[in-house]
Length: 133
Image (cartoon, rainbow, N blue to C red; front, side):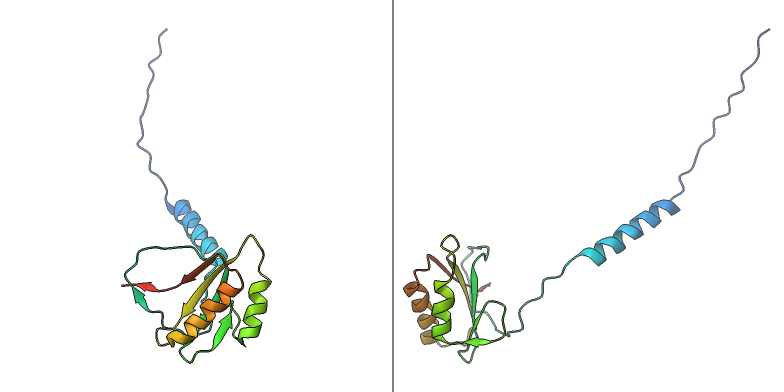
């Protein structure tokens, strides 16, 4: 005896509610675990430049505000030239790089004095930061 096979093809549907839940949980996870880069509390207005060379800051950061005060690293404490020389001498031999962030209203004389201190301390790479035009 031969039986007839009755196949019924049903068109299924995809429930997207679990997909939305997973995407929402991933969004919350990445928002909570991400870190935000906060700039130092020293307010400076960088000068504009047309040069296109972009370098990654790996060494020590020296900040000069418009009054001519010098700050070392991310600290908000002012340093004098003696403390700056000491900090530059203490840099490791393999990482002797310095980035100078000077306000555009800083006197050129102050910038050159910091540059000279870096050269006296045998710093191999000195960069001056600017924002592109």
